[in-house]
Image (cartoon, rainbow, N blue to C red; front, side):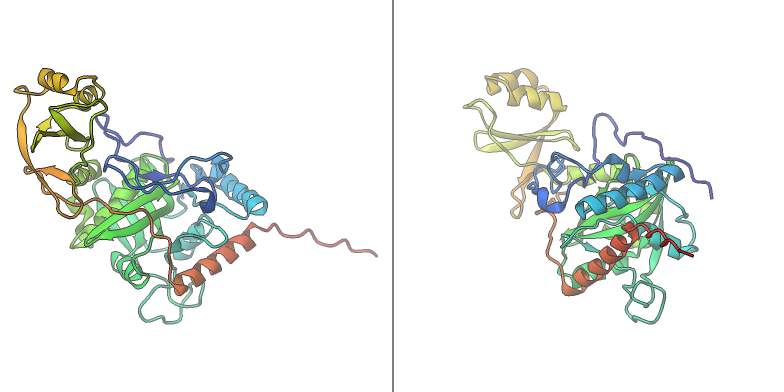
Length: 378
C-alpha cells in the first residue's frame, strides 16, 4: 500500500498558532509539569530538558524511516528502559476496518514505555461484553470508529468507549491510539486526553509533527465534545477556526502592567479573539486590537499615555463580564467557556495499570533482538 508522505507544513494562520503538540523526549520523572496559563499558551505540557531522546524515534515519515524508528526505539529501551510515544506513516487506512491486527500492532510498537508509566493507555480489549476475541488479553478488541470531515479522516476507539473508560478511571489522563488521514498523508500515533470539565476535553498530540499533530488533537477534541460524535467533524468547516473559537471563549486573566499606572490597574489579551481587556479605575472594558497594541501598552513606561495614544476613542469598546468560576473576563459578544483548569491527571485505576504493564512487557520483548543460534559442533 502506498501512502502519501506527510509534508512539513505549518498549521498556522495570521500568526495564530493553536498547536498543542507535546514532544515527549525524556522519561516522565524528568519532566516537571507546567501549570496551565492563558488559553493561548501550551499549558499542561512539559519543560524542555537536556539529553532528549533521539528524534529518529519520534516520527517515521516513510516506510524506511519507520523501520529505522523501531530500531532506534529498541536501542533506547535497552539503554534507558524508556521510550516516548512515537508516530509514523501509516501502514493501513482509516477508511476501512480491515487489517485491525496491523493497526493495533503499529500502535503497540510506538506506545510510550516507562517503568511505572504515568498515563494510562486505552486498552485494545475495552468492550462491555468482554467476550472472547483477538486482543492481547484474548478478549474482543475495542470498537473503533471512523470520524470524517473538516478535511480529515480519523480512525480511533469510539467516543463512547473513550468516555466510558475515562469515567471508570476517575477521569484521569490517558493515551489514545489514532490514525489520521489529511491532505499531507496518513499518520498513526497517539493523543493524550483529559476530561477537564462537563463536556470539555483537553487533547494533546504526542510527537505527531505539524500539520498532522494539531489537526489530530483538534479533531479528537471536537469528536469528544460533540453531542453527536458521528457527525462532529462533518459539521466543522475548519479545524483551525474551530479551535480559534474555542480558545476565544476562554477569555483572559487580568494582570498588572509592567510599569505602575494610575489609569490602568490590570490588563490581558486573548490572541484567538484579538481582544484587549483592561481595568480602568473600577470599570473593565474590552477592545478589538492586534497583539502589538497590547505589547506596546504592557511594556510602556507610561501605560496610561500609550493607552490614550493607541486605544482611547480609536477602537471599538465592548462590555465584559467575569466568570464566577474561573475568574476570567470575556466580552459579552462571545459566549464564555472555562478553560481546562488543571494539567494532566496522572493517577490511574488498577485495571489501567495492569493493562499498561502488559503493553510494556510486550514492547520490552519486542525490543529484544533474537539471540544468534548456538554453534553446532560435529
